[in-house]
Image (tube, rainbow, N blue to C red; front, top):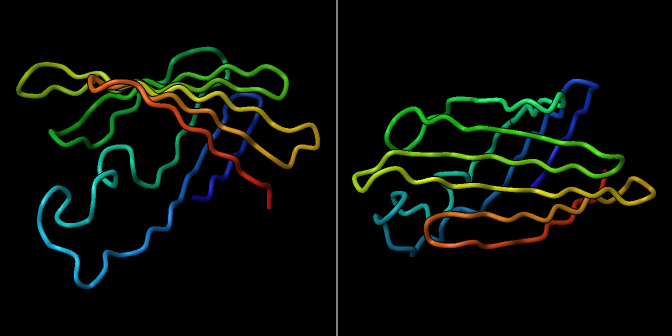
Length: 136
């Protein structure tokens, strides 16, 4: 994954690009994602997100599995730390489902390493991960 971050006094723009290997030639076809594997669909693709730094929530409509879906983005900055969040609610046959992602970013003292601690909450539970990015 490559993450490009551009910051102005008004916004934090985050672009992610992920290179994934194709499925092995002998991989079974069909199933979720048309044989592409889980995780590539909702929330697993490349994107550019602009977070407002004025404390206001930004709402963007994205294509979801059942049509357009609003996503609420919010950011807060403090010195070399940032807190970013995204909340998605999609309507399904069993009612609305809300998914939340909260990122805590911290930049190393020399400004060359960004650590992202991510917590994702869905109706299936909560999971967390830590990603470390080195500046190129």
